[in-house]
Length: 95
Image (cartoon, rainbow, N blue to C red; front, side):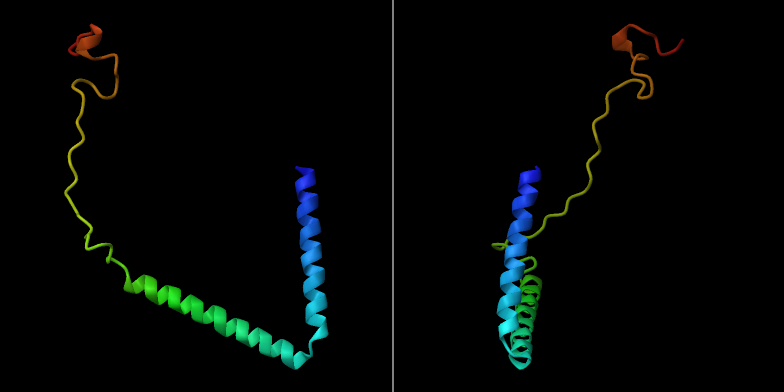
């Protein structure tokens, strides 16, 4: 388990170092432009996914959700509190 953490930490450090080097090379104006483009791209994608999922609610191959009444659960005969107080166990329920 310790080895896995070590590999994960190395990969995170490597990615962090590469990202910092890449971002350090560009000017602050370009950095702002990259951030705004990414914000618009991910924001637009988020809005699209939200609107499309709301639009497609209930449109599954023409199938509609079927609602039915709750059926009564079948119960065994006898005493439900004390299972030994049943006629099939040889005890009388009227003792």
